[in-house]
Length: 295
Ligand SMILES: O=C(O)CCC(=O)C(=O)O
Image 1 (cartoon, rainbow, N blue to C red):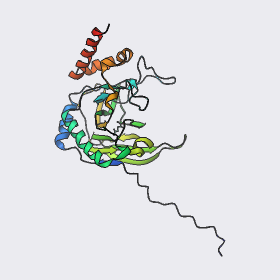
Image 2 (image 1 turned 45 degrees about the vertical axis):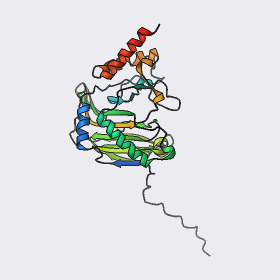
Image 3 (image 1 turned 120 degrees about the vertical axis):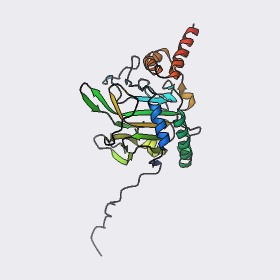
Image 4 (image 1 turned 90 degrees about the vertical axis):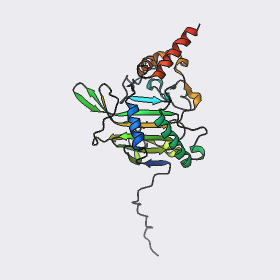
């Protein structure tokens, strides 16, 4: 009889396959769609928001700061100073009614919804889910005096909107990582890394990608020489990403219906948007008319 300890299995060298729920499709956006999107981008006046405001000041230990990049929202605008949409508790006064999708993005959203419905079922596909919200992120470098500072990254976070999230990328390729947070002091574990190329679609859904992991954009290449409109003072854009999400209609509030102090905080942004947007000009007019009607 052998007295040796039983042999341990050697650790498997095969990388673990990430769970299903993540889809990547290069070349999803046609040349015509891409050209229409770029033309539409040229009509925008993106906002470069501050993280906090007069009535939502920085918490202890934090200071006021500008976001890393200019953004534009469609469907509803989740102002940073209103602290974004964070169900289950942070749902009221977070999502301010914004412009509808332009035709080219509306058509893309409907196509993606078909793909998502064929991909996600049950708890992964909430009732009434459809893509009614889009965050347009402008990635690039900002000018500081004589220097250009690259800000093309996003720290790890979750998208709290229910159901699958879709993202269309234009321009330089970007490395997105899905990570699980380890104990304090340990490095995050990367469970999926994907280069997102020009004209690609990424779709992710299900508990693993929405609830159990964070995602982040580690870096954006500089090789392709992309330069996107619109011209933004002190900023050069080499990648634009569109994340499409779903916010239940009950949680979208018109500007005129916000509490007075919240309107005061975001009114300068709405005025800036109104310079290029008939929609936001109407929202300001509605607020003024409601003010006259108020006792
Ligand atoms: O730019 C990207 O690819 C990801 C953007 C993102 O993480 C987000 O909008 O939540």
